[in-house]
Length: 345
Image 1 (cartoon, rainbow, N blue to C red):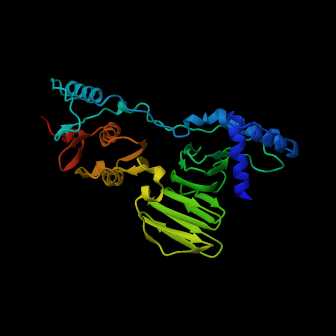
Image 2: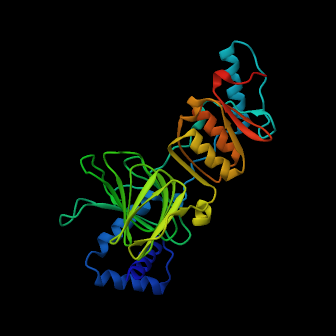
């Protein structure tokens, strides 16, 4: 039944995009005749399309300014602060290169909210919700009102309240399919993902969730997630994975690389109040490099940003912009140092 409804969803969306055949158009007209609230459903879909502009579903945060320009600006700033000139360095990626980046260089790396109100006032006492849907060749970036971010996988649906209230004891969404969650921490209001196979409860973490009719699988990147089914509950920590099958939990195991779990996450990195040391460990695993962070205060600095298909140089340019640090790309490792202890040359 759910598969049949999903096919109708896709048909209606293609119809509103003008991508249906004459036969499919006749099917839509027949559906409109026999469905009591057909016009309301179509109106909701039109608002969804207008809000998200389906072309923006795989939202790219945008490129930073050219690397050479960033380095030139940073070196100019260093020279001004030191009251003496320093040569600009314009070769990024060469062993020993310095990328001292200013915080203002991160323009364009803001998160987009692809939703608008897709449901009007509550109907028959039900809570108004927003629906986010993807087809087989789409993903969606969704920013929730509490600052949490969800990347919705192909052929998936995320349902959220139309508005979030601090008075509600939990933040709750519903998932069909799969998604990667980056949840804003709020100890007073846990985040709960409800699915047909069970629920996932978190305080603040990053994890991938895949939900089918009788199976719920989780891979935790950071934090802890509690999976709960009708028969059992199990907690999963960072770097671990498990699943509920017909309500019963399988043994918790080491998590495989996230790209092996969901290939649509390949090249995607997201951090949400993530300590620099943790974030750089993930960057190192992704790009096959080592990191050295000698300053203990720097290790505790946090990052909130995301990247899609960016090179190591681009990622580090932005990271060093945000933390306003000296970063050296060497042959063996990338070194990150506080600005006031950076090596002069």
